[in-house]
View 1 (cartoon, rainbow, N blue to C red):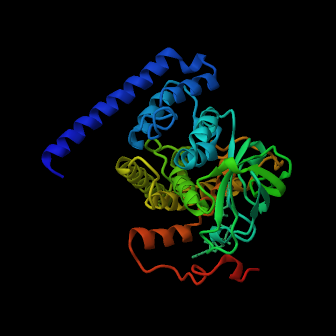
View 2 (cartoon, rainbow, N blue to C red):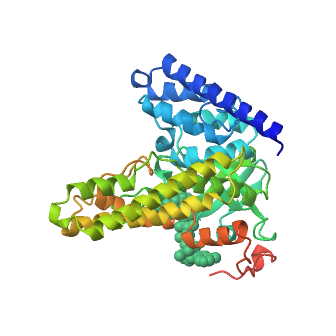
View 3 (cartoon, helix red, strand yellow):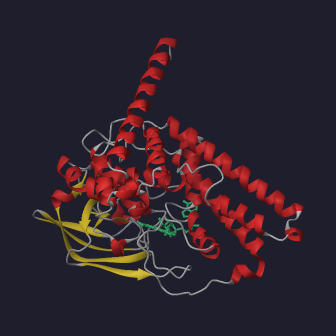
Length: 407
Ligand SMILES: Cc1cc2nc3c(=O)[nH]c(=O)nc-3n(C[C@H](O)[C@H](O)[C@H](O)COP(=O)(O)OP(=O)(O)OC[C@H]3O[C@@H](n4cnc5c(N)ncnc54)[C@H](O)[C@@H]3O)c2cc1C
């Protein structure tokens, strides 16, 4: 890049940044978050293009680099404003970016604003009992019947389906096509006839996710995202955004799990503050900071549009780090780590908010290396698509799905 181009890019970046800062400050001034209704505040945030700054103007964005979202969030949260992500994590982090990339104008207008305000929660209906990592092999199906899809499928691990108004569903519409080519994505009404949601209780005692059964459920063809057969490409948009949403968040320095570990260590009696536990705490702190700085760098390089495979780095690193940090907390707690309190089945309204208690956080962190794609699968993606290593063996890639042996 020439020196002149570089200089003009820097000027544009500076003026974009100032524009964003001015807009947020105006929003906070016009609607002081502490005394404004949450939905009204988030609605105004959307209307002023500050919901996802990288989205197009008119759809909650400003058409700018996603790196400026951090400025918006920091200022809104510092003023006591709401966090749209915690209100609707799957919707905000994954379904919104998918709708904006693949939806028609009508779908974008209908869905994005209430998704952002949290008035309509969304869920992601991808995994099936026989297809998780090998999601492209799924067998839930939809057959076209006039202007409708007739859906029969069983989905599993569907986070927040029990509170969702809409779901992003991927099913097989052409069993004779190659497995990646026969998939179609669509928006489903979770309250429609033929859609049944049942709780799945996890080891924290909560049931934040569900099984969802579709029995002759009817979905208007107009609710297809992309075209029939685009389902795999649509899902990639969702999955890449999911990895950034899970692992690419940029927390303040020494916050989150590492903050919990520091607080716990500080409260330990002097005789238990050994060199070994101090060293371990420092090691975890350094990794948390390296991960945070790496995410800042990745965020600054991210362009407008769907994130690339580099989102898998943050996802993989944060999964291991969270698990190890909470395991360290259990080690510090000693026998107290086994005390859990009431083990009632709770149906939470959000899946990404702060959890209550270190024991629960420890148990919940075990899912971090599975949800949004396992750490083994992240290593495959990074090996193949970032490092350029030889690919995993894929013997079923070029065969029609109907000919692939299944359990
Ligand atoms: C808390 C939580 C929330 C979730 N929320 C949702 C949701 O909202 N919507 C949704 O659709 N899904 C959701 N999931 C499902 C999640 O995406 C899957 O669990 C995940 O993709 C793994 O699939 P699986 O469970 O079928 O395991 P499998 O794919 O059967 O994997 C089993 C083991 O084999 C390994 N493995 C598989 N393939 C390979 C390979 N090619 N190379 C190396 N190792 C491999 C895996 O790493 C794993 O260790 C959620 C899961 C969890 C834990």
